[in-house]
Amino acid sequence: MKAFRSLFSALLAASQVAAMPPSRFAKQHILSASSKARPFGIGHFSEWSRATKKAFLVDWQAGKASEWIIVQGNEGGDLDSMTAALTWAYHLAHATENSTHPVKAIALLQTASHALDLRPENKLALDNSQMTPDHQDLLTMDELPEDPETLSRKLTGIILVDHAEPLRKWSHAKIVSIIDHHKDRGTAPDAKPRIFETVASCTTLVARQMLDELENLDQEYHMPHELLELILSAIAIDSGGLTSDKTTAADIETSKRVLARSAWSKKNVMEVMEDLDDELSDAQKDIDRLGLRDLLRRDWKGDLIDTPSPSTPTVSLGFASIPYSMDSQVLKTNFAELFDWFAVHAAWTAEVSVDISICLNKYKKHHKNGEKEKIREIVLTVRDDVRIDQDQADSLFKTVKEALENNNEGIELVPWHRADELSARQMVWTHKSGAGRKVIRPIVEEAVMKWD
Image (cartoon, one colour):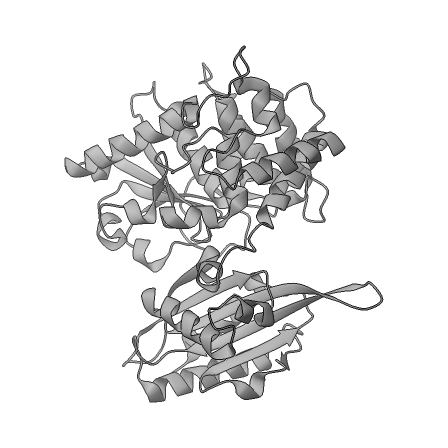
């Protein structure tokens, strides 16, 4: 473990430069006899991904988008969502390539290409899997040649992974399959496969289904080691190296099955997963260099929400998750003042056309006795320049504010210590519950859906 961490420290330092060397694990199988590392983007998985991206764009240009299925995760773009989409797209294409009805499938990362590296753990995992450093082999939202609302009508369909229901802009697409580890919202009851199961990582469910189907084929297709290692990475970071409270028997057993096919097959699964978790978790924390705007968009999720209001039938709602306190975020602005936080936030929410925004902050407070206390914050803002006027914005702010303060989840919200400095339609609370986005988002969405 110590040796691994030492090597990882060197790797993490090297990640600050343009040409990042492979990880220790990658070195075991990508170094030549002369000990010179091969460049990124020449592995089988990268080549397949790039070729698939080209084929999709060529077919779109030729008016053949209807032949394709898009596999998509959620718009947060974490390692689990990205890996699940890439894995299932690879499986679909290869499992059917010798059949009478081969499937054309491509993974779509619902983030912009320039935002992918805002998650250092994603960059590290992709580098370890020999993907191109500039993401030429990945299809991202800003590279779609057509608006999703238009494209969704043309596709064979979409497949949701790590995502219980599609964003509004994809609502016209047929949902072919759903594989998710969140709450079943009843979307697409006829989808096949349709898998909802509580596990630490959605990639666990995708990999298990993939292996089950792969092992039932008359002849197995080639499974690149780069993809297997990416799968293990996603499961490792979501399960705390298979040791967190979220870890299930399915996470452990699937990891063993994947490991057995990988270049690390002779290693102990717990040791591999612990090392991967250490490596990726350290990278995940390496975001001090990010400014406020990047922190806001780094883990951003949002969609249109229906309301009963005839004048405003839909409202755009966005959520950011930030691992810093409000006080620390203020210091990251140019003027290091509270007004500048809201100026930067306003510029970002204007860019993405959001009416109501929720920022969920979490951090650890250090006490003099050496103890650490986990603190969370909720920042609520409502704009009046997108879909709603000032009176509507005031009403919507009041509705959501009351819903949060009077929640039925046992969350005791306390006004932030500088709450008296906030302007109209701005509020910040602190709380010590473990409630994150999965708890807060339904409260806000339900309030918006009842707002008139």
